[in-house]
Picture 1 (cartoon, rainbow, N blue to C red):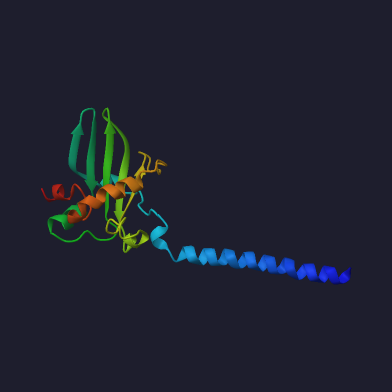
Picture 2: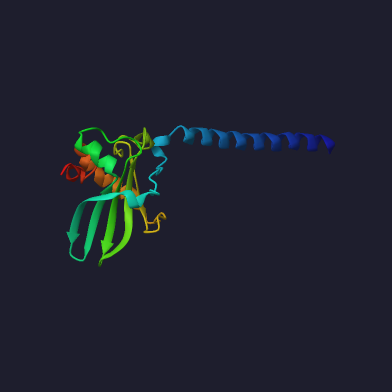
Length: 164
C-alpha cells in the first residue's frame, strides 16, 4: 500500500506542473501579441475648460462641437504633425444640453496596440459622460473603424477646420 501512495503522489505533482506550464505558456503567448489586446488609452482631460471650440455641426435638435487646445490648433496651422499627448474632443449636445464627449488621444507608438488593418495612426478613442467618467457603451472600435477613412488628415475629420 505504501508503494501505491508513492506512485500516485508523483503523478499529482506532474499534473500540477503540467497545468502550470500550460498557464505560463498561455500568459507568455498573449503578452507577445499587443496588436490583439484591444487596449484603449484615451483619457479625459483634466483641463477640459482650456479646450477651444473650432468647429460646430448642427443636426436638428442636436449638435457636435470639435474642441482642441490652442497649441494643438497652432501646430495644425503651422503644418506641423500633432505630437503625442494631443487630444481632440467632440462635445455631443442634444436639445441644447451637453450629454457627453468623444475623446481621441494620440500617444507615442499607440498604434502598435492594434493590427495594421485596425490602426488609426497612434490615436485611441473613448466616450465619456459630462463628468469625465468612461461611458461603458462599446463605441471606441466604431470610432476607430470610421476614422480609418481620414488617414490623409491624421485621422481627424475636422482637421481642416482647425486651419480657418
